Length: 270
Image 1 (tube, rainbow, N blue to C red):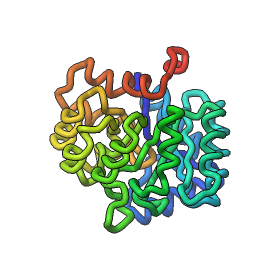
Image 2: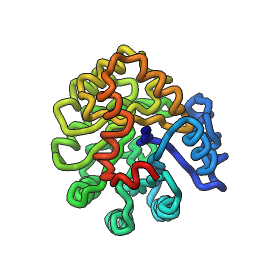
Image 3: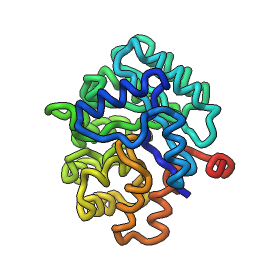
Image 4: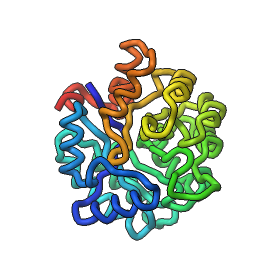
């Protein structure tokens, strides 16, 4: 079984423009066109049983539209949509309640796109709501190749969030910090945060990735691709280069995600 905790899916009318602009800004070649249909095709062809579809509320005015799209994906087989809220939105907590009541399991925060530091106190009500209500908060961890420093979601800043909200279900994407592996180990291993493997096969030496993953332990590593910027096949091949045991790989590939997402057996295989 394979569960991808980290993919990006856009509404059909926005996908081409969104993927094209992001690819040009960061210098990446996408593997899908960003639509739901093309993402499902790739996931199906490469053995993924279920995937988390992420979107980002880049401003308060896009927040409700992003969440409407997430809610529309609930009926899609094998798709687990996350919502998103913006800390400058006066409706953020209301939107979180709407997502929770509709059965959405988490939200995505991208501090570069949303232009706030991860440990800015203005976001604390969002984190507190998620902690209290069991919603997962998946952060883009570390640098973003399309943005200049300072890094708004560095491992050090994410550590501050983890310590302030110790019961929150936090995922620090990109092995805890894109281009910041050592800081991820130093700052986040002592917290309860999970990390995911998204984009790592295209950006992190396998030996470095293995060091990070072993520092966190196999129980806290989630399989993720960052599709359309990487693929399941690439990421599986990358992890298979590392001498993890069969049980450790099972935890990374799907068991940890099942636990975190609270998936029942029927959801795991549907």
